[in-house]
Image (cartoon, rainbow, N blue to C red; front, side, top):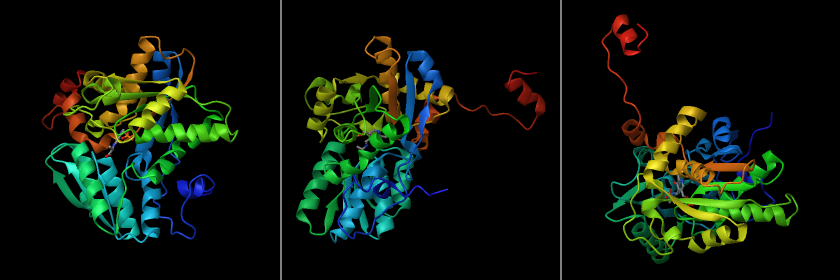
Length: 352
Ligand code: F0G
């Protein structure tokens, strides 16, 4: 069997890197496109899940980071910097470690999930917890990268991040043998919806596919600037990954929505948590809360008739459930404590 080489090599003709560059890879990409029978039956469409939690650091960020860190190393940077709600920082820290670069991350104090913080710590990043939100962190990261020589900004405002992330659209078309009819995904800083749309358009422009999907993006109701049409000063949601009030790729998201005939809508934290539990308990797919926003959007648009019946549908689930163990433990049924007794076990399981 041949080994999956990582996405830069797999899509060498579509992802540009500097000539002769050392490719910094953890063999990211090549993630499962998993059929979702329970969801399909529920919504009357052929639903697939793009399992981005299967990437090396547990989120889709690895797709952009292999490209961004490959460029940073080739450009002679000694360090990378990013702002993050958690996943970007985990990914940047891992790829920087692999490349032998320093990594600085700016995260909103107290607002990133435990697993993500543990990753950045483990990979040896320099972590600054900023007393502000993600939008403040991004502004600080941009200013620092601009002011200091040799530090590369690896947020998705760096266009090479988008180049890496667009490969998820290629993988979906390669597996389905066509583009899906509808693609649903969570939206925070809006880099990913921008990237998918770019990937789908590229394949269609080159005749690899004959159509492009309608792009359906979903923000958390308490952090829905694209739905409201203006920035949100104090974004709030249980889905901390998408707790963002002023998306950097605002225009990219609007372009994806409008030119694909799609939509960007909001889902409440209650809808996100319901989708989160449904995914884990009926499909066996444990994702982090932000990722469940795509499935919450699937259920919402199926219920109100906006999701076409019988369509081929892909929901990207962006990050692994283990990223945020606390939300799982707080929102699911708590484990029962029993003494060392067969009788007590039988009673607790109601099989006595
Ligand atoms: N899902 C997860 C799990 C994320 O971590 C993010 C973004 C998104 C969805 C939204 O993607 O920003 O491209 O619209 N996380 C960034 C971070 C902001 O810092 O990890 P987007």
